[in-house]
Image (cartoon, rainbow over all chains, first blue to last red; front, side):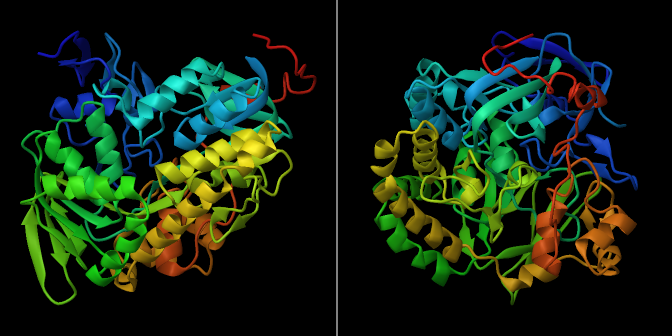
Length: 83
Length: 429
């Protein structure tokens, strides 16, 4: 278990991460590889890791289209990927 | 929220931090805005938590003492009028007034399309490194690294330290060119030592030159990669594929401000001043030269913007040295023409709008393709496919439109409501 863990939920599943973890990493730690569905249906995940490509977009606390690679995890966050 | 400063710097990477220190130390009111919640840009991400004092930590510490204001998680989205930047922060839109502006917007990785390149698990090497520093799990993962640039070795080394099993590292440039880079390394002892250290630790991991990827396969994520040296073709199994081909400069904001480009980079004079009055540019947008080149350019820009010309001039010789290194980098890692034919007609080029190469070829120019196929019109605004199309088809993004980054409608509505009568001496909330 990480020191000073932050608890959040990925697709309803509880995940514990250490401080300084970005949401994209928390999603990966939860075993999810598919972050969003492309417009023609293909699975997508982070590409650039730097906030440029927008492939890592997820829904955070109800707000859609958020870049998970540029957002730090916070206690109690609720995030959803396209399933 | 309204903010007014003498000098505003966009980007808190090495160039931006060096510029901010130089400007603030000359008594100017300075602000630095950055997209991310951390200091140091993408290249120094995670450095603050390292136990030993690094170059990054020294600069971050110097910046903290400089008196400059940090506006983090603040993305510049438009330039509604001269002297004003419109920016977005998660809690509010921000209008930032400047007398002088220094653009230190950095670079991004270049991605080239090949069959299967959109599969989850295929990430830019620099991007993967950045994600790993913020908790992305790679322990025990098999990773194939391919593409081009010095970054490949540094990234492979970093991933290995985090417990990844590096299957192989493949550089597209031929050995003859990469070895020719040696003399440039020799004139920069720091870089040379770094390179040697990395090589030692990588012992046991094949580093191949003249090898490039042709295909990736998997179901819902990448499972294997096919590579070639032009004669033989083989397949390697992996859990992640780190693939990127050098860097491309982030010139969208400079373009939106009207800065002239030259060969795709922001054109600057000896003081790092761009073609637009009171606008300066430093670091990767002026040429891909790495951290040390960015630092010296940033210092020159910060001094010059603060009207301290003597200390700026004292750095010219050092900058010239790093510009030679920059030119050597470009020669050594030039992309081979074979990479232009990796994508098939049914390979996606635009990942936001799912436009294939075949579809894009039906149109004469970028603009035409954009209007009729929507390529480059998705949320990344052509940042990925623009560079790829330019390399493959010889045509790519020619101009930008505000907002230069996806923004909330509320941020755009705010623009103009307080811009009409700004008081440069007062910060209002």
